[in-house]
Image (cartoon, rainbow, N blue to C red; front, top):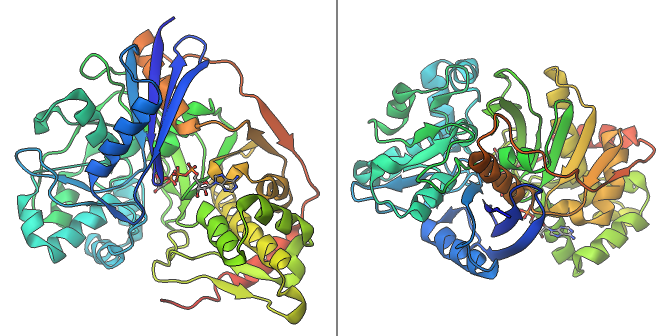
Length: 459
Ligand SMILES: Nc1ncnc2c1ncn2[C@@H]1O[C@H](COP(=O)(O)OP(=O)(O)O)[C@@H](O)[C@H]1O
Ligand SMILES: O=C(CO)[C@@H](O)[C@H](O)COP(=O)(O)O
């Protein structure tokens, strides 16, 4: 029995799974936590990976390992391969001004969408490079190479210290803002526009390539999740992690000049139009903390209140927001009355606010012509019964909830199995165990949310 391993180095933690390469059966797994904050030294990811690997019983017996990770994080390396400064993560909004500058300099949002598949917001790596050039010119001057979290971890695992050995994959590089999903080429001119110079970039390897004899190409975490749930055309995957995302596999590059949908590539040679929000599972943890309850009690409270929380609306922009692009926004509570000031109403409004923002994301994919035949709900937040139960009511369609698993790490493991097997397509692993959840649609919940979501103030 050949074994493969998959890693998910995500925002809040690192997870490692070891699976049977032929059947996909889970053999062992491990995890470790990441530091909080939106600026993290990559060595913390490396330490967490070592802990998670040890927790998973080591990787000596696996044929291949693939690393998937949070997207967009800016990892800067000097000539010697040393990290120049802590990475700015996807949810760090300090480069919002840089995004606006670069947008103007290229001639507007459509120009960026055409060039790199996405309209610029602070999440994209290229905006972080402009921020670096403007605010830390000494660090920018020392920077000899730029890569992403999964590129750096794969390189470190390989033991290499040469910048020439850095590799990435289509799915993750498509979120940098200096690679075109249409031509599948880097745009060094855009890198130079941002950073003031061209630096070394990872070589983009194919989805099923093996690097250094033992490492898969790796992927952005959402593309890996699509591999992990074995997403098919017509499926929309909704993930509730630190970020909220909705994405679908699609054969052609997608551009959306409004900036709602990112035209990313996937990890199978196709494309992955994706909507991402800055606020998702932490809406739940923050609300539980305010109420002084745990997540299980928050779920019970939410289910104890009526649909629509009697008009209480929670606009969940607690960390600013990326979609819609409101980096300086704060969240808001609307509809506060004596009778809606109860823990149950607040819990309900938090869950519904989260789901309404994701329903908007699904609608944006639909508006670009993506079929929504099945909605698959994954990520840590999908473990909450209230989220699972209310999702079909808010989304207005049945929702498939795959049984809890680390789908990003699973997808990375499936990629590793693909690389080892050498077939044209990833191996078909056994069908997901999942539950279909249905509920009577509650369109008024979304109408009320739509009326409130623009009523926010900035920090
Ligand atoms: N039962 C649960 N109910 C609600 N939220 C949960 C539950 N279990 C985990 N979470 C939340 O899910 C998040 C982690 O999910 P995950 O998908 O691993 O995120 P990420 O990939 O961003 O690190 C945490 O914020 C955690 O609080
Ligand atoms: O920025 C994006 C997608 O564009 C996020 O989805 C990150 O990739 C972080 O993912 P999680 O840690 O929340 O899973």
